[in-house]
Image (cartoon, rainbow, N blue to C red; front, side, top):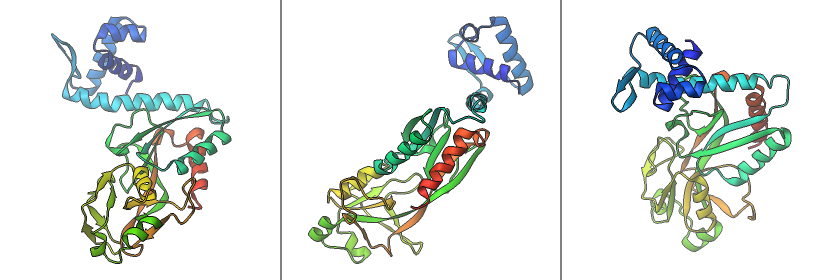
Length: 294
């Protein structure tokens, strides 16, 4: 596929007209139209349709526009990153993370990146389900589970997180420690809404499940942890062995640790086109080293 033809098509889609796209690209409208027509000839189907309201996409055009944007972004990122070969990683690293990862895990990670590569800036955004949205303009996606991004992405498990029940000592002294699934039902329960899972269905380590009616359901892991720290109830959430800031190590304790919970993989996924770029490769290696003790 000719990149100039694809760029012309994407610009027409994004600006809504041949004239605006031609001005954006600095070419004549005739040249722009010729490139789009050449792309349609390659595709063998119409991609755009002129209406009284302006240019609209055909069904085939919608498919190409969605994938084409990603291709152009990957191409642009690849060309920019090639300039870094042999040099210290620099520029912007764009990362999407699951909502509510504990700050006491993210803060040292960010500090590690900045101290190791001071010329590298980080743009973080959060999503309740990173894989459910278009990953346009993303260098790295962090997500839980076995699923992987659709398309040419490479995915690896960097950590297997134990998911289980946690509560504060104060709450358990006040309300009692449940010794069975039946006793658990009488407590204030907080459920993590994990992507693709039913928050009211909780797992056991034997592979079975049971149903609960949580007082709180949220995709925000940190909110659940904060509620547990405040002594408000018992939460089912993924956890790592890091102390919460300002708290002693035994503030949160496991509840029914041999009965309720599962192991959930934490994955880092990167576009295949960027996987060998120093900025991506070196950061991934450093993060794995940081997470290894956990």
